[in-house]
Amino acid sequence: MANVGIISLGHYLPERRLTNADLAKMVETSDEWITSRTGIKERRIAGTKEKTSDMAIGAAREALEKSGLDPAKVELIIVATISPDSNFPSMACLVQKAIGAKKATAFDISAACSGFLYALTTAKQFIQSGFCKNALVIASEKISNLIDWNDRSTCVLFGDGAGACLLGTVRAPRGVISEYLHAQGQFGDLMTVKTAERHPLDQHKKETHLPYVVMQGQELFKVAVNSMAEAVQIAAKKAKIKLSDIDWVVPHQANDRIISAVAKKLNFPKEKIFVNIDKYGNMSAASIAVALYEAVEQQKIKKGDHVVLVAFGAGLVSAANVVRW
Ligand code: ACO
Image (cartoon, rainbow, N blue to C red; front, side, top):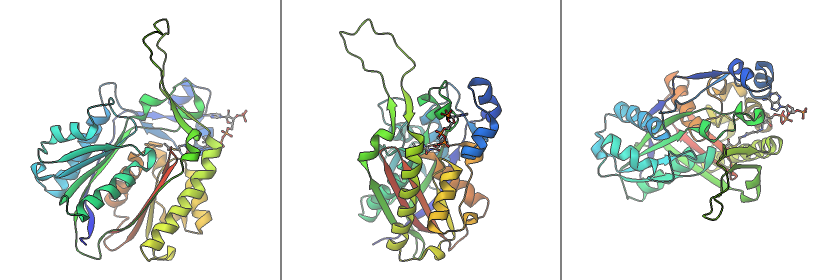
């Protein structure tokens, strides 16, 4: 079977920074509370005219430019998102149009914060089966659209952004060498989006500020730590490597305390875990894509490294991949 690997990476971050000090003017919170409980200092917030699809297109363009691949030769586009511009058309179709990937198959995946890894693993199967030769995998989120900005327990945690990678065939030993995708629907109630019901007979109902995220933070915390630690172990076992062979872990960035707890549970050095939550908060599916982009740009991840990508998200869904860089 063909070895499938990451050829290039791209990202897109909105210009506007929302700091903890800004949030302290909006809700009853403080920089001290947010920093000590989460590790977040600031996050990016997309402008009113800056859509999820715009960010996806920006990240896709950078990944394509870096690869040198003619957009007309892209054969598959998958966008992971839980915050699309609208229910349809899919974000992947909007990317296809914008970049001129006329030949590409295009669809979206909804797996919350595990979305980038669900999309990466799906695209890998399409390439290995011979369905296509390459795939653009994008994660883009405008989570700010799903937040109740009066709710201090959620509004301090999230941010907007996008990341992308081009997948293609690579020479062994490089490539995405293992994958683990898991779902625990029994924990679905821990994080949901409260939405508005519309019925033709309910004309008296007023529009509200729905939809918005509701979450049981403490319960999620515990499941997140267990799920991510287990995902790292399973993906490493499938790749036939020991935890001591791992050079970098690039985890979903939901809370720095979750990341520290995973490191402790695995007895894995925190210095080998890439963290950028201080700058961006939780960008859902886009978190790992942007973190991987930065870890490579900063030359932390080097050729030959074993990199573990690991996520958990609403659903609950967890996922991990081992990538030989
Ligand atoms: N500022 C100040 N005080 C606050 C804030 C805030 N922003 N938010 C909550 N508080 C208060 C609470 O009201 C509570 O006050 P009380 O003791 O008087 O009742 C107190 O702080 C403690 O609240 P807890 O919820 O117990 O705080 P905790 O230490 O658990 O931290 C947090 C909360 C940061 C949400 C944590 O539980 C967490 O990170 N959980 C995981 C969340 C997560 O990962 N979500 C995303 C997963 S899925 C996905 O990414 C799509």
